[in-house]
Image (cartoon, rainbow, N blue to C red):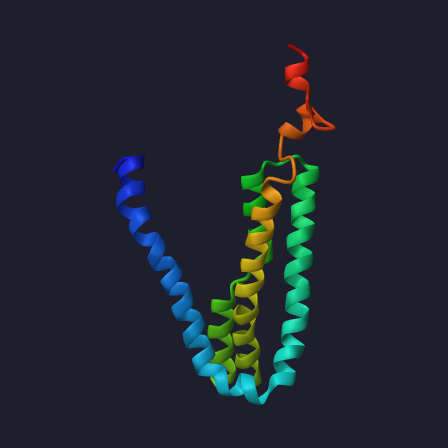
Length: 154
């Protein structure tokens, strides 16, 4: 299977399903713990606040380290999102298997993706906004004060 056929037959077909799967997972998670989320809002806030800080700090730290290393936009984006994301699916499975579906541990594990998804989606929009406003990768070395040095050398 060639690259074009792979893109046309598989990637174009599976892409909408990944979004549907993500939405389905969030709906099922919230439906299974919705009553606990509403009844124990203090616990939810106690779990959510550090998670929001964690995602922001790790994402921004990775973003600035990648910029300092002169990575291009695509590599910086991938590194930042990989560093900030978590494997909450495994956390939920372990919490439910160990402590039961109605435990506070299962609730705390469920709050993770409910916070992670909107925070990371907002960071997607941040990266899209920064894409055209910052100079990325090797271009930074050839541009100084808005003047392209590669053109000046000609």
